[in-house]
Image 1 (tube, helix red, strand yellow):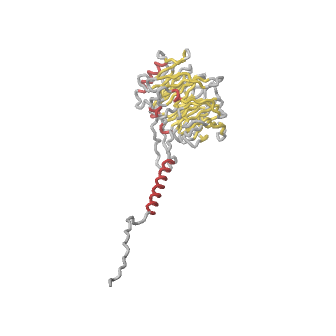
Image 2 (cartoon, one colour):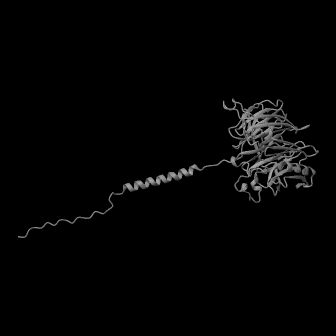
Image 3 (cartoon, one colour):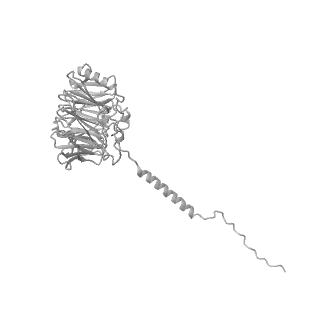
Length: 413
């Protein structure tokens, strides 16, 4: 799975087992970390319930990464259950490699940058210390369903988690058992969360039902909802036909005014604007169409939208907001530098492209057992009535012949 992000002026991209960081302003040496060459975990006999020690197995593919609010720290987690913490300023340094209990789906730094939250597939959230980078994680809270996203409010007061069962839970960070509110309204799994920087009390959520919703998360009140399927002129893709146009990523610009939304498997990126004073707070602005499938999106510090594409020829595009429209900026020195380095690194990677559908296994399959039961019940009733009808008929169906009356005659005299 290929993703992108920004850590200050550093452009970040994950592809297969690699984390690639390229500075967009200065001709600094790019930083590349390959999880397949990282430290291996040796299980002790205690870890494997008395069996022989063995190495942790996995594909080393990067599953998720997060950047701290100051842009000085980066964390990644991979399929081999590593949790790796980096410092990127003044220079790149691997601070620690720790291990998580289960494979993770989402990471989030606290605003104070003293805590790193890790959400995993079993529904648990673990807390890892940033101040003590070698300390093991502690269980923070849990859901009864797989967690897909976790974030922390701008004031560090709330932990917001989203799961496969359509729920968004807002919990108090210091006492996670104290639930502040639920944001309920999605009809499929909630795949992504975003708190706009200029609206710290609002929450944007995307789901497998193809909708983007705006919440006032402390009260759980829904402010607005957009069905992205209604914005499609031609639902020609397989994802759209199967109603699987799940929202893959929602990101907001540094100023918080612009919001970009990417759906899994579609060729478009949807641009919105946020306005506090308007009745329609989340307003649709435009749709960006691409010839190659977008794999991920992200805003840099200047508010430019970077789009990672499923193409070795044109792996990146930059879109800049000018004169009330988003224009593709092809003549850009930052774009050329980053693209050249990405091509060099991706050429050694076998699995560069992402999968067609990230969320196919998360959709709930419904079984109509009632109609099947009623059909079989009606069949049994009809068979029983047929048997009763046959039993009521006489055993012999032949008509009995009438015997002629005897004629008594007297002898003649």
